[in-house]
Image (cartoon, rainbow, N blue to C red):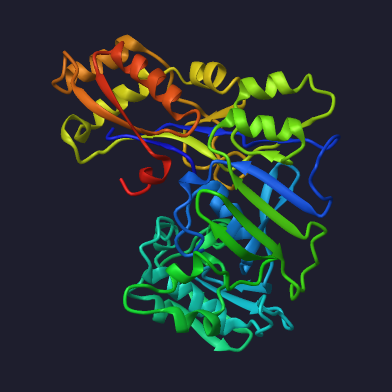
Length: 411
C-alpha cells in the first residue's frame, strides 16, 4: 500500500483508488488489459510477503484464498472461496473450514486442505508485514502447529485465543498472506531462510485466475489466464502492467489508447481528462490509504502529548481538497469505510493553539526538529510539503527526506 512514512500517527486519510479507462480509441486487443503504473514500489510477488496495494492486487489475480471479500451494497462481506463452508464453535474460538472438491492449482496439481494449512504456516514463518493481523487473534509462528490443525484432506480447524466477531476472523483471512500456495511446486525451491520467495518473484504457484508469465523489473509484469481455473474462466486472457513512473506519462498512454488503466493519475489530471469524450473516468472506492506514521520510540515522539499535538497540527481537509482534489475520504481510524468496525467519527481537526499547548505541556514549548521521510511517488512529495508547512505553524521543524518508492518499505 502506498503510504507516507516518517520518523514521526495516528490519522488515516483513506484514498479512493481512481482508475481511468480509455475505450474509444484503444490500441490494445480486446482480450488484453494494459495497466500503466509505477512499479518501482514493487518488492515481491510472494503472497506471504506482499503488502502494497497494486502488488497485492496482482497477487490476488494469481492466488486464491479460503475466504474472499465480496461487495454487497456499500459493505464488503467475507464469503467462501476455496472453502465451501465454515462452522464456528459455540465458544466462537474454533473455526472449522471445509474445502471445495475438484480444485486445482494452475499447473494441474490438486488443491486441498493440506495446501491451505501448509500455506498459512509458511506465512507465519516469514517476516511478513501483514502477519500481525493473525497474530493479533492469537495465532503465531510458535503455536501455529497447535492452532492450525489438519483434520482430513478437505477439512482443517483454526483455534483462536478468545472469542472474536466472525467478521474480524474471516476478514483477516482475506489478506494476501492467507493465499493458498502449491506446496509440491514450491518446496523444491526452498532453502535455508528462503521459503521460496526468490522463486515466486519470477514464477507463480497459485490457484487464481491468472499465472505469472514474466516479471521484467522496471519494464513490465505479464499475467496470462490460468487454464485450470475452475471457479470461472476470465474473459480477459492477458494482463500487462507496464512500468510508467510518471503520472503524466500514464495519462498520455491512456489518451493515446496504448493503455487501458492509468493507476497513479492525480485528481487534477482526472478532472482535466473528464472533458475527453473518448475516455471514460471510473471512480471506485479503494483500499489504499495515506497516513503519517510516528516513531513512538524516538525522542519527543515518545510522549503521547506530542503525538496528539501532531494530530491537531494537520489540516486534513486541505490535504484532501488541494492535493487529492477531493478524491479521498477522511477516516481517523485504521478500519476503512465498508469494513466491519468502521467508525465515522473524526475527532481530530486543525487547532494550532491546542497543538502548541500540548507541546508546551510535554516540555517542548519551542517545538523540535524531526526527519520527515517520504517516497518520490506521486503525490507523496507534495503531501510531505503540506505536512511540513502545517507542522511549522506549531513550532515543529520537519526536514523532508525523499527516497525511491521501493526503499520506503525497508525503512
